[in-house]
Amino acid sequence: MAKKSAATQAKAAAKSGATKVKPATAKERVLITGAAGFLGSHLCDRFLQEGYHVIGMDNLITGRLKNIEHLFHRSDFEFHHHDVTKFVHVPGKLKYILHFASPASPIDYLKIPIQTLKVSSLGTHNLLGLALEKGARILVASTSEVYGDPQVHPQTEAYWGHVNTVGPRGVYDEAKRFQEAITMAYHTYHGLETRIVRIFNTYGPRMRLNDGRVLPAFIGQALRGEDLTIFGKGDQTRSFCYVDDLVEGIYRLLKSDYAGPVNIGNPAEITIKQFAQEIVKLTGTKQKLVYKPLPQDDPMQRRPDITLAKKLLKWQPKVDRAQGLKITYAYFKGLSKTELNEKEHNSFEGYVRR
Ligand SMILES: NC(=O)c1ccc[n+]([C@@H]2O[C@H](COP(=O)([O-])OP(=O)(O)OC[C@H]3O[C@@H](n4cnc5c(N)ncnc54)[C@H](O)[C@@H]3O)[C@@H](O)[C@H]2O)c1
Figure 1 (spheres, rainbow, N blue to C red):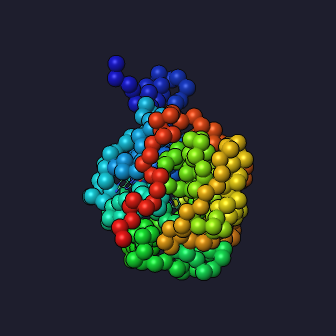
Figure 2: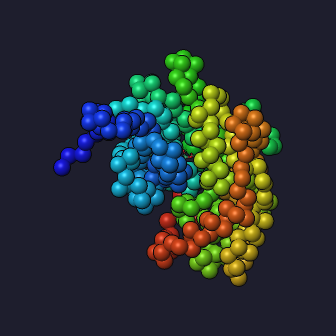
Figure 3: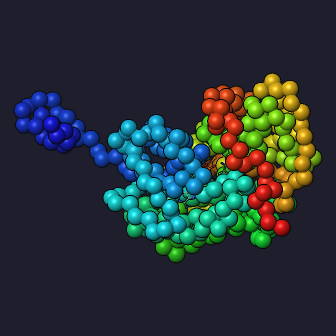
């Protein structure tokens, strides 16, 4: 039997004199690109929790359906397998667009540099056009990489950055810088409602174990009983933000009325060597630390200045590294042997043409 809509039920109830049923308001619709990726999948969860209808879009170039398969039974979730560098059309209304599609690990963008350039340039252009057509507010995922190898520490939003346009990381960094510029141009020229989040290193469940990022790389090596590889001397620093904190910051930024870029990250800074030692302790591995040459243009220092986010969004990270690492380690420990031994990204060298 066909289901009656809430409005029909309410009318019937009113006619029969029964208690009035309030018609359910249609859910507001959100488009999330990169939905099958690490951050996109967590954003889908959050927006569904908040009562939105979520449309996830992804071409699965670095993402996995496994990250969102728990959502496929829901009537308030739909998935579009689509490359956002091609024309993007979504029928119906859209309240918000969150553009998170883009390879995000250095190994990924070394492997697929042209796609990386396209998704944050052509892809962003397509999504800004869609936002304009729908009258939707759009938030784009920028990155701390717009600061390059920074000469200002910690990095504030006012710092313009230090990027090598033609280095191996240039394809990602410059595409993200272009993304910010075109997003701001749509804001100033078309009056579009735009938000820009500059995300610093984030970690948590659903990262790919072998995507080349330092945290899953160390945990993967520990779980496989391999030595932990440190690039350079290990005195370069990073700051790691747990994914739930990041998602909260993004949610608040989207709802704010601020169109300039905002740093979201955890300012607790650690050297890579100390971080490797933390992983050794956490996993109880008996392996040692081994050293390899530092890849070109690897940033030496990374730490967000989050004064603006604190003031504007009343946001700051709540999950400390010990807590976040425990949850993340439990996730990686639960992976199958096949996933644990996938060799997709064990070394940078194979992807760099000299
Ligand atoms: N994770 C971090 O620490 C971090 C830091 C800074 C910025 N970011 C940004 O956040 C976003 C998500 O990063 P992530 O860590 O979840 O990476 P991810 O690789 O796990 O997810 C990216 C997703 O985008 C999809 N995608 C890529 N190109 C696409 C295209 N042309 N069309 C449709 N889908 C496409 C991939 O298949 C993948 O599912 C990226 O824009 C990234 O630049 C992430």
